[in-house]
Amino acid sequence: MPKRYRSKTQQLQGAFGGKMGRRILNDALRTMVNAERRGKATANLQPVSNAIAEFLKIMKNRGYIKDYKVADMNRVGKITVELQGRIKDCRALTYRQDLKAKEIDEFKIRTLPTRQWGYVVITTPNGVLDHEEAKSQNVGGQVLGYFH
Image (cartoon, rainbow, N blue to C red):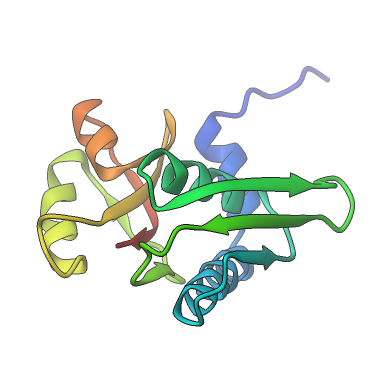
């Protein structure tokens, strides 16, 4: 039987699964916010998923965290995040929210507290992108969460 081709979105949806995968992502993001509020320099995230790693990559590219290290992804796994003190709020949507490319701005305005900072993270056929990259590539997808 030939292997079936799976797009990047289908692979990532396997990581998010249903509500359980999104709950794991939300728990990890809330752990980071709580560590920031307590003034800690690092946060340890467990359990690990590809979704968390992709979300953290976007946060690092946008300057919201210094760095992150994934330890032992195949087994139990742990991610250590070096915090920078810029995260005010960070959440994953536990419900499924599909967005078309032209609806991204409206969702961003409705979700984020101001137009000047913050990012909405979307899983698209081109991979996991923030709202600015998704708009520039004119591609929609499912909203994973947001941070500001």
